[in-house]
Image 1 (spheres, protein in one colour):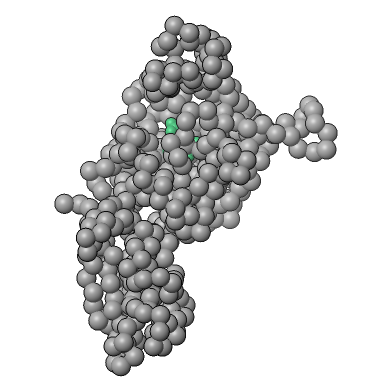
Image 2 (cartoon, protein in one colour):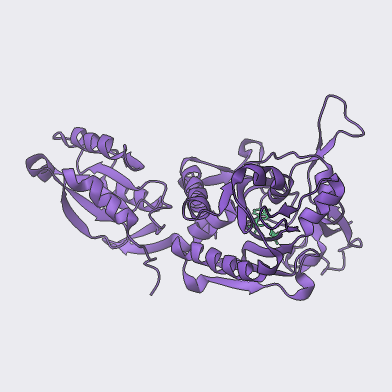
Length: 445
Ligand code: ATP
Protein backbone atom coordinates (compact mmCIF):
# COMPACT_ATOMS: atom_id res chain seq x y z
CA UNK A 1 0.00 0.00 0.00
CA UNK A 2 2.84 2.39 0.86
CA UNK A 3 4.25 1.98 -2.64
CA UNK A 4 0.90 2.73 -4.27
CA UNK A 5 0.41 5.77 -2.02
CA UNK A 6 3.91 7.02 -2.88
CA UNK A 7 3.35 6.55 -6.62
CA UNK A 8 0.01 8.36 -6.41
CA UNK A 9 1.69 11.34 -4.79
CA UNK A 10 4.79 11.29 -7.00
CA UNK A 11 2.80 11.28 -10.22
CA UNK A 12 0.00 13.48 -8.96
CA UNK A 13 -2.86 10.96 -8.96
CA UNK A 14 -4.02 11.50 -5.36
CA UNK A 15 -2.52 13.39 -2.44
CA UNK A 16 -3.58 14.60 1.02
CA UNK A 17 -5.98 17.56 1.01
CA UNK A 18 -5.20 20.85 2.82
CA UNK A 19 -1.56 19.82 3.00
CA UNK A 20 -0.21 23.33 3.54
CA UNK A 21 -2.23 23.39 6.79
CA UNK A 22 -1.01 19.97 7.84
CA UNK A 23 -3.74 17.98 6.12
CA UNK A 24 -7.20 16.92 7.28
CA UNK A 25 -8.03 13.41 8.39
CA UNK A 26 -9.25 10.95 5.75
CA UNK A 27 -9.53 13.59 3.03
CA UNK A 28 -7.69 13.57 -0.30
CA UNK A 29 -7.43 15.61 -3.49
CA UNK A 30 -7.24 14.09 -6.96
CA UNK A 31 -4.64 15.52 -9.34
CA UNK A 32 -4.56 15.37 -13.16
CA UNK A 33 -4.06 11.62 -13.71
CA UNK A 34 -6.23 10.80 -10.69
CA UNK A 35 -9.10 12.79 -12.18
CA UNK A 36 -8.69 11.05 -15.56
CA UNK A 37 -8.52 7.56 -14.01
CA UNK A 38 -11.53 8.30 -11.79
CA UNK A 39 -13.53 9.55 -14.77
CA UNK A 40 -12.64 6.39 -16.69
CA UNK A 41 -13.87 4.19 -13.82
CA UNK A 42 -17.12 6.16 -13.68
CA UNK A 43 -17.40 6.09 -17.48
CA UNK A 44 -17.08 2.30 -17.57
CA UNK A 45 -19.75 1.99 -14.88
CA UNK A 46 -22.18 4.20 -16.84
CA UNK A 47 -21.36 2.25 -19.98
CA UNK A 48 -22.26 -1.05 -18.32
CA UNK A 49 -25.46 0.37 -16.82
CA UNK A 50 -26.79 2.57 -19.62
CA UNK A 51 -25.11 1.89 -22.95
CA UNK A 52 -24.89 -1.89 -22.78
CA UNK A 53 -28.48 -2.43 -21.60
CA UNK A 54 -31.80 -0.69 -22.01
CA UNK A 55 -33.53 -1.28 -18.67
CA UNK A 56 -31.75 1.42 -16.63
CA UNK A 57 -32.06 5.21 -16.69
CA UNK A 58 -29.79 7.88 -15.21
CA UNK A 59 -30.45 10.34 -12.40
CA UNK A 60 -28.53 13.09 -10.62
CA UNK A 61 -30.40 13.99 -7.44
CA UNK A 62 -29.52 16.67 -4.88
CA UNK A 63 -26.96 16.12 -2.14
CA UNK A 64 -29.09 18.01 0.39
CA UNK A 65 -32.58 16.54 0.53
CA UNK A 66 -35.55 17.26 2.77
CA UNK A 67 -34.48 16.30 6.33
CA UNK A 68 -37.44 13.94 6.70
CA UNK A 69 -35.74 11.74 4.09
CA UNK A 70 -33.33 10.55 6.76
CA UNK A 71 -36.06 9.99 9.30
CA UNK A 72 -37.85 7.73 6.84
CA UNK A 73 -34.73 5.91 5.67
CA UNK A 74 -33.70 5.12 9.24
CA UNK A 75 -30.39 6.99 8.98
CA UNK A 76 -31.27 9.54 11.65
CA UNK A 77 -31.94 6.86 14.24
CA UNK A 78 -29.71 4.06 13.10
CA UNK A 79 -26.78 5.21 10.93
CA UNK A 80 -24.39 5.07 13.85
CA UNK A 81 -21.09 3.57 14.87
CA UNK A 82 -20.46 2.56 18.48
CA UNK A 83 -17.56 4.69 19.71
CA UNK A 84 -15.43 4.67 22.84
CA UNK A 85 -13.22 7.51 24.10
CA UNK A 86 -9.98 7.05 25.97
CA UNK A 87 -9.87 9.46 28.93
CA UNK A 88 -6.07 9.14 29.05
CA UNK A 89 -4.96 9.76 25.46
CA UNK A 90 -8.19 11.53 24.38
CA UNK A 91 -8.46 9.47 21.20
CA UNK A 92 -11.73 8.04 19.93
CA UNK A 93 -12.09 4.49 18.61
CA UNK A 94 -14.75 2.34 16.93
CA UNK A 95 -15.84 -0.06 19.69
CA UNK A 96 -16.19 -2.83 17.09
CA UNK A 97 -12.68 -2.19 15.65
CA UNK A 98 -10.65 -2.13 18.88
CA UNK A 99 -8.67 -5.10 17.63
CA UNK A 100 -7.20 -2.79 14.92
CA UNK A 101 -6.87 0.45 16.94
CA UNK A 102 -3.42 1.49 18.09
CA UNK A 103 -3.19 2.89 21.64
CA UNK A 104 -2.61 6.68 21.55
CA UNK A 105 0.35 6.52 23.94
CA UNK A 106 1.91 3.20 23.05
CA UNK A 107 1.13 2.49 19.40
CA UNK A 108 2.73 -0.96 19.69
CA UNK A 109 -0.27 -1.89 21.91
CA UNK A 110 -3.95 -1.90 21.06
CA UNK A 111 -6.38 0.60 22.59
CA UNK A 112 -7.42 -0.68 26.00
CA UNK A 113 -4.42 -2.99 26.37
CA UNK A 114 -2.21 -0.93 28.69
CA UNK A 115 -2.94 -0.30 32.39
CA UNK A 116 -3.16 3.47 31.68
CA UNK A 117 -5.88 3.07 29.03
CA UNK A 118 -9.21 4.31 30.41
CA UNK A 119 -11.97 3.65 27.89
CA UNK A 120 -15.54 4.90 28.21
CA UNK A 121 -18.54 2.66 27.54
CA UNK A 122 -19.51 2.57 23.84
CA UNK A 123 -21.79 5.40 22.69
CA UNK A 124 -23.67 5.60 19.41
CA UNK A 125 -22.33 8.30 17.13
CA UNK A 126 -24.26 9.30 13.98
CA UNK A 127 -22.14 9.35 10.84
CA UNK A 128 -24.15 12.01 9.02
CA UNK A 129 -22.76 15.53 8.67
CA UNK A 130 -25.30 18.07 9.82
CA UNK A 131 -25.50 21.60 8.50
CA UNK A 132 -28.20 24.23 8.22
CA UNK A 133 -29.97 26.10 5.45
CA UNK A 134 -31.17 29.68 5.45
CA UNK A 135 -29.83 32.76 7.16
CA UNK A 136 -31.04 31.87 10.64
CA UNK A 137 -29.59 28.89 12.38
CA UNK A 138 -32.11 27.12 14.53
CA UNK A 139 -35.14 24.96 14.59
CA UNK A 140 -36.30 23.69 11.23
CA UNK A 141 -33.15 24.62 9.34
CA UNK A 142 -31.05 21.52 10.11
CA UNK A 143 -30.23 19.41 7.07
CA UNK A 144 -27.79 16.62 6.33
CA UNK A 145 -25.23 15.92 3.66
CA UNK A 146 -26.37 12.62 2.14
CA UNK A 147 -24.53 9.55 3.47
CA UNK A 148 -25.54 7.55 0.36
CA UNK A 149 -26.94 8.47 -3.04
CA UNK A 150 -29.66 5.79 -2.96
CA UNK A 151 -32.31 7.76 -1.07
CA UNK A 152 -32.50 10.44 -3.79
CA UNK A 153 -33.43 7.65 -6.18
CA UNK A 154 -36.29 6.43 -3.96
CA UNK A 155 -37.66 9.97 -3.56
CA UNK A 156 -37.76 10.36 -7.35
CA UNK A 157 -39.09 6.88 -8.12
CA UNK A 158 -42.59 8.03 -9.12
CA UNK A 159 -41.34 11.02 -11.11
CA UNK A 160 -38.83 8.97 -13.07
CA UNK A 161 -41.47 6.29 -13.69
CA UNK A 162 -43.74 8.92 -15.24
CA UNK A 163 -41.31 9.83 -18.03
CA UNK A 164 -38.89 6.91 -18.31
CA UNK A 165 -41.27 4.71 -20.38
CA UNK A 166 -40.11 1.71 -18.36
CA UNK A 167 -41.85 -0.72 -16.06
CA UNK A 168 -40.37 -3.08 -13.46
CA UNK A 169 -37.94 -4.71 -13.83
CA UNK A 170 -36.03 -1.48 -14.45
CA UNK A 171 -33.33 0.48 -12.70
CA UNK A 172 -32.30 4.04 -11.83
CA UNK A 173 -28.57 4.71 -11.66
CA UNK A 174 -26.71 7.56 -10.05
CA UNK A 175 -23.11 8.64 -9.44
CA UNK A 176 -22.29 11.32 -6.92
CA UNK A 177 -20.66 12.39 -3.71
CA UNK A 178 -21.68 11.06 -0.33
CA UNK A 179 -20.41 12.12 3.09
CA UNK A 180 -19.77 10.17 6.28
CA UNK A 181 -18.12 11.31 9.46
CA UNK A 182 -15.81 8.29 9.58
CA UNK A 183 -13.43 8.12 12.50
CA UNK A 184 -11.62 4.87 11.73
CA UNK A 185 -8.25 5.31 10.00
CA UNK A 186 -8.98 5.50 6.34
CA UNK A 187 -6.22 3.47 4.64
CA UNK A 188 -5.65 6.11 1.99
CA UNK A 189 -8.72 6.49 -0.27
CA UNK A 190 -10.31 3.24 0.97
CA UNK A 191 -12.31 5.17 3.57
CA UNK A 192 -12.70 8.93 3.31
CA UNK A 193 -15.07 11.53 4.74
CA UNK A 194 -16.38 12.44 1.29
CA UNK A 195 -16.43 9.92 -1.50
CA UNK A 196 -18.20 9.22 -4.75
CA UNK A 197 -20.63 6.35 -5.03
CA UNK A 198 -21.98 4.53 -8.07
CA UNK A 199 -25.36 3.20 -7.03
CA UNK A 200 -28.19 1.62 -8.95
CA UNK A 201 -31.62 0.73 -7.59
CA UNK A 202 -33.25 -2.01 -9.65
CA UNK A 203 -37.04 -2.11 -9.10
CA UNK A 204 -38.59 -5.53 -9.68
CA UNK A 205 -41.90 -7.35 -9.20
CA UNK A 206 -41.64 -8.93 -5.69
CA UNK A 207 -41.63 -12.51 -6.99
CA UNK A 208 -38.59 -11.77 -9.21
CA UNK A 209 -36.33 -10.40 -6.44
CA UNK A 210 -34.34 -13.62 -5.99
CA UNK A 211 -33.65 -13.91 -9.72
CA UNK A 212 -32.43 -10.32 -10.04
CA UNK A 213 -30.33 -10.51 -6.89
CA UNK A 214 -28.40 -13.42 -8.45
CA UNK A 215 -28.22 -11.55 -11.77
CA UNK A 216 -26.60 -8.49 -10.17
CA UNK A 217 -24.13 -10.55 -8.12
CA UNK A 218 -22.86 -12.15 -11.32
CA UNK A 219 -22.97 -8.95 -13.36
CA UNK A 220 -21.02 -6.86 -10.87
CA UNK A 221 -18.33 -9.51 -10.33
CA UNK A 222 -17.95 -9.74 -14.08
CA UNK A 223 -17.57 -5.95 -14.40
CA UNK A 224 -14.51 -5.91 -12.15
CA UNK A 225 -13.05 -8.89 -13.97
CA UNK A 226 -13.66 -7.38 -17.40
CA UNK A 227 -11.74 -4.30 -16.25
CA UNK A 228 -8.77 -6.44 -15.41
CA UNK A 229 -8.93 -7.21 -11.68
CA UNK A 230 -7.39 -10.61 -11.11
CA UNK A 231 -10.03 -13.25 -10.40
CA UNK A 232 -8.05 -14.72 -7.51
CA UNK A 233 -8.07 -11.31 -5.81
CA UNK A 234 -11.88 -11.03 -6.01
CA UNK A 235 -14.57 -12.86 -4.10
CA UNK A 236 -18.23 -12.63 -3.18
CA UNK A 237 -19.03 -12.86 0.51
CA UNK A 238 -22.63 -13.34 1.62
CA UNK A 239 -23.54 -11.57 4.86
CA UNK A 240 -24.37 -13.78 7.84
CA UNK A 241 -27.95 -13.36 9.07
CA UNK A 242 -26.77 -11.33 12.10
CA UNK A 243 -24.81 -8.95 9.83
CA UNK A 244 -27.76 -8.07 7.58
CA UNK A 245 -29.25 -4.58 7.76
CA UNK A 246 -32.76 -4.59 9.21
CA UNK A 247 -34.27 -3.94 5.75
CA UNK A 248 -32.34 -6.56 3.82
CA UNK A 249 -33.17 -10.22 3.30
CA UNK A 250 -29.89 -10.89 1.49
CA UNK A 251 -26.66 -8.93 0.99
CA UNK A 252 -23.31 -9.90 -0.48
CA UNK A 253 -20.13 -7.91 -0.67
CA UNK A 254 -17.76 -7.99 -3.58
CA UNK A 255 -14.43 -8.14 -1.78
CA UNK A 256 -10.97 -7.46 -3.11
CA UNK A 257 -7.69 -8.65 -1.64
CA UNK A 258 -6.23 -5.21 -0.87
CA UNK A 259 -2.76 -5.00 0.71
CA UNK A 260 -4.70 -4.47 3.98
CA UNK A 261 -6.50 -7.81 3.47
CA UNK A 262 -9.85 -8.84 2.02
CA UNK A 263 -12.14 -5.79 2.18
CA UNK A 264 -15.45 -4.63 0.76
CA UNK A 265 -15.40 -3.10 -2.68
CA UNK A 266 -19.12 -3.04 -3.29
CA UNK A 267 -22.31 -4.15 -1.51
CA UNK A 268 -25.17 -5.83 -3.37
CA UNK A 269 -28.39 -5.93 -1.34
CA UNK A 270 -31.94 -7.15 -1.70
CA UNK A 271 -33.63 -4.21 0.08
CA UNK A 272 -37.16 -5.62 -0.29
CA UNK A 273 -39.74 -2.81 -0.41
CA UNK A 274 -38.41 -1.19 2.78
CA UNK A 275 -37.44 2.18 1.31
CA UNK A 276 -40.56 2.76 -0.80
CA UNK A 277 -42.76 1.69 2.14
CA UNK A 278 -40.98 4.10 4.49
CA UNK A 279 -41.09 7.06 2.10
CA UNK A 280 -44.75 6.38 1.25
CA UNK A 281 -45.59 6.41 4.97
CA UNK A 282 -43.57 9.50 5.83
CA UNK A 283 -44.61 11.55 2.80
CA UNK A 284 -48.22 10.40 2.55
CA UNK A 285 -47.67 9.80 -1.19
CA UNK A 286 -48.56 6.60 -3.01
CA UNK A 287 -45.36 5.09 -4.38
CA UNK A 288 -46.80 1.90 -5.84
CA UNK A 289 -46.36 0.84 -9.41
CA UNK A 290 -49.66 0.45 -11.25
CA UNK A 291 -49.53 -1.86 -14.21
CA UNK A 292 -51.47 -0.31 -17.13
CA UNK A 293 -53.18 -3.28 -18.80
CA UNK A 294 -53.88 -5.42 -15.70
CA UNK A 295 -54.43 -2.63 -13.15
CA UNK A 296 -52.28 -4.63 -10.75
CA UNK A 297 -50.66 -2.49 -8.00
CA UNK A 298 -47.61 -3.31 -5.99
CA UNK A 299 -44.59 -1.83 -4.27
CA UNK A 300 -41.59 -3.06 -6.24
CA UNK A 301 -38.74 -4.78 -4.44
CA UNK A 302 -35.29 -3.33 -4.92
CA UNK A 303 -31.92 -4.90 -5.70
CA UNK A 304 -29.08 -2.46 -5.11
CA UNK A 305 -25.48 -2.74 -6.27
CA UNK A 306 -23.63 0.09 -4.42
CA UNK A 307 -19.98 0.70 -5.27
CA UNK A 308 -17.43 3.33 -4.28
CA UNK A 309 -15.47 5.17 -6.98
CA UNK A 310 -12.36 5.84 -4.88
CA UNK A 311 -12.36 2.33 -3.46
CA UNK A 312 -12.62 0.76 -6.94
CA UNK A 313 -9.89 3.06 -8.17
CA UNK A 314 -7.68 1.96 -5.27
CA UNK A 315 -8.33 -1.69 -6.18
CA UNK A 316 -7.44 -1.03 -9.84
CA UNK A 317 -4.26 0.76 -8.76
CA UNK A 318 -3.20 -1.97 -6.31
CA UNK A 319 -3.92 -4.68 -8.86
CA UNK A 320 -1.99 -2.85 -11.58
CA UNK A 321 1.07 -1.89 -9.54
CA UNK A 322 4.10 -3.88 -10.62
CA UNK A 323 7.88 -3.74 -10.61
CA UNK A 324 10.18 -5.44 -13.08
CA UNK A 325 13.66 -5.08 -14.45
CA UNK A 326 14.43 -3.38 -17.71
CA UNK A 327 17.95 -3.05 -19.10
CA UNK A 328 19.39 -3.66 -15.62
CA UNK A 329 17.21 -0.95 -14.03
CA UNK A 330 14.18 -1.45 -11.87
CA UNK A 331 10.98 -0.27 -13.51
CA UNK A 332 7.71 0.60 -11.77
CA UNK A 333 4.73 0.08 -14.03
CA UNK A 334 0.97 0.40 -13.68
CA UNK A 335 -0.53 -2.44 -15.69
CA UNK A 336 -3.93 -0.80 -15.93
CA UNK A 337 -6.54 -2.05 -18.36
CA UNK A 338 -6.08 0.25 -21.38
CA UNK A 339 -9.66 1.57 -21.16
CA UNK A 340 -8.90 2.77 -17.62
CA UNK A 341 -5.45 4.21 -18.32
CA UNK A 342 -5.48 8.04 -18.00
CA UNK A 343 -3.38 8.43 -21.16
CA UNK A 344 -3.63 5.87 -23.97
CA UNK A 345 -0.62 6.83 -26.05
CA UNK A 346 2.54 8.87 -25.55
CA UNK A 347 4.33 10.33 -28.56
CA UNK A 348 8.06 10.74 -28.02
CA UNK A 349 10.84 11.92 -30.32
CA UNK A 350 13.89 9.66 -29.89
CA UNK A 351 16.19 12.67 -29.79
CA UNK A 352 15.39 16.31 -29.34
CA UNK A 353 16.84 17.43 -32.70
CA UNK A 354 16.93 16.71 -36.45
CA UNK A 355 13.28 17.63 -36.91
CA UNK A 356 12.11 14.72 -34.74
CA UNK A 357 10.33 16.85 -32.07
CA UNK A 358 8.41 18.75 -34.76
CA UNK A 359 7.32 15.56 -36.51
CA UNK A 360 6.41 13.89 -33.20
CA UNK A 361 4.27 16.88 -32.25
CA UNK A 362 2.49 16.69 -35.59
CA UNK A 363 1.68 12.99 -35.00
CA UNK A 364 0.56 13.78 -31.47
CA UNK A 365 -1.78 16.51 -32.75
CA UNK A 366 -3.34 13.97 -35.13
CA UNK A 367 -3.74 11.25 -32.49
CA UNK A 368 -5.14 13.36 -29.68
CA UNK A 369 -8.21 14.16 -31.75
CA UNK A 370 -9.15 10.49 -31.27
CA UNK A 371 -7.57 9.25 -28.03
CA UNK A 372 -6.12 10.83 -24.87
CA UNK A 373 -2.48 11.33 -25.84
CA UNK A 374 0.62 13.03 -24.46
CA UNK A 375 3.67 14.54 -26.10
CA UNK A 376 6.94 14.49 -24.18
CA UNK A 377 10.32 15.62 -25.44
CA UNK A 378 12.10 16.47 -22.15
CA UNK A 379 14.93 14.27 -20.83
CA UNK A 380 16.31 10.97 -22.07
CA UNK A 381 14.01 8.56 -23.91
CA UNK A 382 14.48 6.03 -21.09
CA UNK A 383 13.30 8.54 -18.47
CA UNK A 384 10.30 9.51 -20.57
CA UNK A 385 9.26 5.86 -20.92
CA UNK A 386 9.70 5.30 -17.15
CA UNK A 387 7.31 8.18 -16.56
CA UNK A 388 4.70 6.84 -18.96
CA UNK A 389 5.03 3.34 -17.46
CA UNK A 390 4.39 4.77 -14.01
CA UNK A 391 1.18 6.46 -15.07
CA UNK A 392 0.08 3.30 -16.90
CA UNK A 393 0.19 4.52 -20.53
CA UNK A 394 -0.30 1.33 -22.56
CA UNK A 395 1.37 2.45 -25.79
CA UNK A 396 4.30 4.62 -26.78
CA UNK A 397 5.04 5.97 -30.23
CA UNK A 398 8.67 6.81 -30.91
CA UNK A 399 9.66 9.05 -33.79
CA UNK A 400 13.25 8.42 -34.97
CA UNK A 401 15.46 9.07 -37.98
CA UNK A 402 13.71 6.31 -39.95
CA UNK A 403 10.37 8.13 -39.48
CA UNK A 404 11.81 11.06 -41.40
CA UNK A 405 12.84 8.70 -44.21
CA UNK A 406 9.90 6.29 -44.59
CA UNK A 407 7.10 7.64 -42.38
CA UNK A 408 7.02 4.65 -40.01
CA UNK A 409 7.12 4.93 -36.21
CA UNK A 410 7.84 2.46 -33.41
CA UNK A 411 4.80 1.40 -31.42
CA UNK A 412 5.84 0.05 -28.02
CA UNK A 413 3.63 -2.03 -25.73
CA UNK A 414 3.87 -1.24 -22.00
CA UNK A 415 3.44 -4.86 -20.87
CA UNK A 416 5.05 -7.08 -23.50
CA UNK A 417 7.61 -4.39 -24.43
CA UNK A 418 7.15 -5.50 -28.03
CA UNK A 419 8.04 -2.86 -30.58
CA UNK A 420 6.28 -2.84 -33.94
CA UNK A 421 7.09 -0.65 -36.89
CA UNK A 422 3.84 0.99 -38.01
CA UNK A 423 3.22 3.42 -40.88
CA UNK A 424 2.18 6.76 -39.47
CA UNK A 425 -1.10 6.68 -41.40
CA UNK A 426 -2.14 3.40 -39.75
CA UNK A 427 -1.46 4.47 -36.15
CA UNK A 428 -4.92 5.70 -35.36
CA UNK A 429 -6.62 2.46 -36.50
CA UNK A 430 -4.00 0.28 -34.84
CA UNK A 431 -4.48 1.99 -31.47
CA UNK A 432 -8.28 1.80 -31.80
CA UNK A 433 -7.96 -1.92 -32.62
CA UNK A 434 -5.76 -2.57 -29.58
CA UNK A 435 -8.07 -0.53 -27.33
CA UNK A 436 -11.08 -2.61 -28.38
CA UNK A 437 -9.30 -5.97 -28.02
CA UNK A 438 -9.97 -8.15 -24.92
CA UNK A 439 -7.38 -7.54 -22.23
CA UNK A 440 -6.01 -9.76 -19.51
CA UNK A 441 -3.70 -8.71 -16.69
CA UNK A 442 -0.15 -9.81 -17.51
CA UNK A 443 0.25 -10.38 -13.76
CA UNK A 444 -1.97 -13.47 -14.13
CA UNK A 445 0.14 -16.54 -14.46
P1 ATP B 1 -17.83 -0.09 5.15
O1 ATP B 1 -18.37 -1.30 5.88
O2 ATP B 1 -16.51 -0.32 4.49
O3 ATP B 1 -17.90 1.17 5.95
P2 ATP B 1 -20.43 0.12 4.06
O4 ATP B 1 -20.90 -1.29 4.09
O5 ATP B 1 -20.90 1.06 5.11
O6 ATP B 1 -18.83 0.16 3.94
P3 ATP B 1 -22.13 0.89 1.92
O7 ATP B 1 -23.01 1.73 2.75
O8 ATP B 1 -22.61 -0.45 1.48
O9 ATP B 1 -20.72 0.74 2.65
O10 ATP B 1 -21.64 1.75 0.68
C1 ATP B 1 -21.42 1.21 -0.61
C2 ATP B 1 -20.00 1.42 -1.08
O11 ATP B 1 -19.61 2.79 -0.92
C3 ATP B 1 -18.93 0.64 -0.29
O12 ATP B 1 -18.84 -0.67 -0.75
C4 ATP B 1 -17.70 1.43 -0.60
O13 ATP B 1 -17.16 1.08 -1.88
C5 ATP B 1 -18.21 2.85 -0.68
N1 ATP B 1 -17.96 3.53 0.60
C6 ATP B 1 -18.72 3.50 1.71
N2 ATP B 1 -18.19 4.27 2.67
C7 ATP B 1 -17.06 4.81 2.14
C8 ATP B 1 -16.06 5.71 2.64
N3 ATP B 1 -16.14 6.25 3.84
N4 ATP B 1 -15.04 6.04 1.82
C9 ATP B 1 -14.94 5.53 0.58
N5 ATP B 1 -15.86 4.70 0.06
C10 ATP B 1 -16.90 4.34 0.81
